[in-house]
Length: 173
Image (cartoon, rainbow, N blue to C red; front, side, top):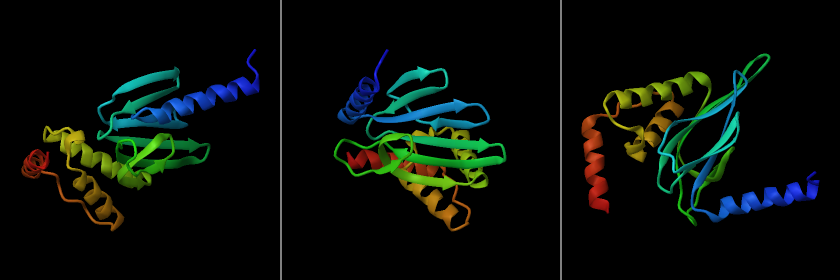
């Protein structure tokens, strides 16, 4: 049987392994109707299944992804939020978030189910244009965050704006 000291060493080794690689790791949890953490969009670089209710997905530096967290208790919803992040390179500054190691460049963070639902609708509208939300300009996600914080409607992301972003990104390389 493993001693508490052996367990602690194993946990420390796993934490060191995560810190030494260049990926951003997100722990996903699924206890139906209790705690549900999931990825709404993003191109995963890897996945590790812990057990039937938990897994860890990884993102390469520069990848944009949406992380949704929801939890409830016997009295109703206690947590509802969505974060759109860019996975950072080693040595780059980042913000910390629960279940995200080491952290990420936060492009959007929204709490409260009505606002989270609105962001999910924005994502759906972008996908309806045939655009992968991963490819959307980071400035748009910041715009959506700021407009919603000011209780205003965000501007629609259009094909024209997306084409301009793609050209600007090519010139910047």
